[in-house]
Image (tube, rainbow, N blue to C red):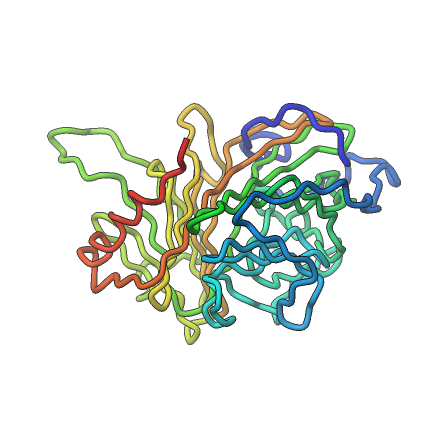
Length: 362
């Protein structure tokens, strides 16, 4: 296993300077050939899980039986081991694949100079900002699995082109639907790099992403802006899938509309949600006012096309020295039997009591 330094908060990936974040630089140019070891080490010693949490090896997901399932009797997560690191399922126990909040997208792939990257679906970790081919380093090989009590750690082999090693650590509470997802990027190269953890959840079709607006204050109270809202060249705010209200920004996933849409915000409220067929997925994440974030200072982004919707969070800017690790944490909850009604009034009535429940206990 890797040698770790003390984890620090994630920071923005800059190829040269803050003014060159859109360049498609490849970090492999900094590394002499053959420096990065590609083999995956053998699994470490495993500790038993906490009472109430069941960790099952060789769990099935589709035709693949090499997965790990974590369950507490209420919700379950399925973690891929044949590729990744990926979390491919988050759902209530006893539901079928149509009730999986995460989307399955086997038909989408991207080819680059680094090989073929397959989106597959589920939840993954990237390093920001997006650039091709760097962001699309394939993750098609088996991952190392380490168990530490009720935490399962998925550890990717070092990316040969970037010198970066990705890890996702998953911990499910013994009761309820709360799961803690820790994302880690380690610089295994010889040179310092600037990077941000980018946590991306591919959501199942036909749902609604919900991002909070900053609390309303009148012009008499506040003169300065509340936050940035960032658009991509293909963003079209007249698209009917968007709704920008006083309390929420929502984006609807429509399988019949193949046009891409994306928007990013600096989310000081620290939560985002996805509603689908009576189930509500809530993720919480940190906001650090002392640091900058990728993409004109966004820590929360949403994207959709005809195949899926992505609910994304990003960590703040960090320079990673050789051997150092940066981390970014998300906390997840999943609720069933939710009715968001119509419009912002219905969303607020449904979300407010659930957001009050979706708090990490100290």
